[in-house]
Length: 281
Image (cartoon, rainbow, N blue to C red; front, side):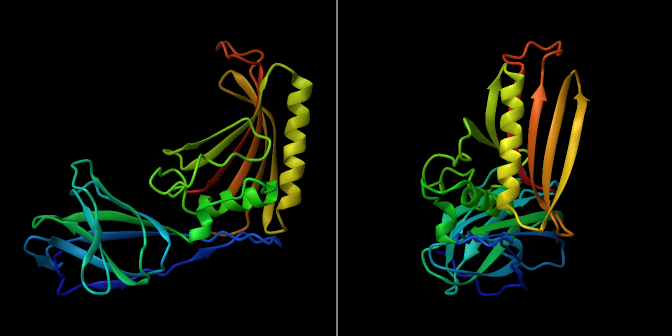
């Protein structure tokens, strides 16, 4: 493997987002986003490219998903260990992004490079998602509060780590008693369906039950807002939203009941109840 003899290094400060509630299970998932730029003033190394370097401390067994995007040049990324060896690098493509997904075998101080060719010039966004070993595995016997804790931890990183089949340790976790679940990769959200049928009373009962249970799981660090029935296109929606009381990009849980009874679209069923978990962008 190639050796890197010189670097420009900026420290990635990890901000830990831990669910603020008195529960035994904690799942640590960290996420950072950096807005950077490659210019003619940045260093260039033949057979490597023009680059910026970011120092990041990683621990054995951690799972990572690093992504760099740019509209101005085709980026690549490389993760270099403390010996100067390239441990992992992205596969080259022409789609305007670069991605590394892996599990860290040996802890230490690494350098993550964002790389362009010799003429690369322009801005980029670097996103890093890191999860402790226990943050990708949930016991099948976990109760609702623990499952919510698990999913909210991953909402910190917009589910970058759960959505990737290279890191997933089994099928996608479903919220307790839900009938289906999926991750919307474009929105960065987790979605679970609890009801999809024609009984208005049952749909309302399930909506209230889930709302009450989620409220019991969350602490005072969450703000609750109610959305009364309103028209969304040609159907109706009512919701209850729990939003984290933080200033920047709060996580949230939105519980929704939909009424398609008078919709001109031919929905399979008249009522649905679902839960969305995400973090504001």
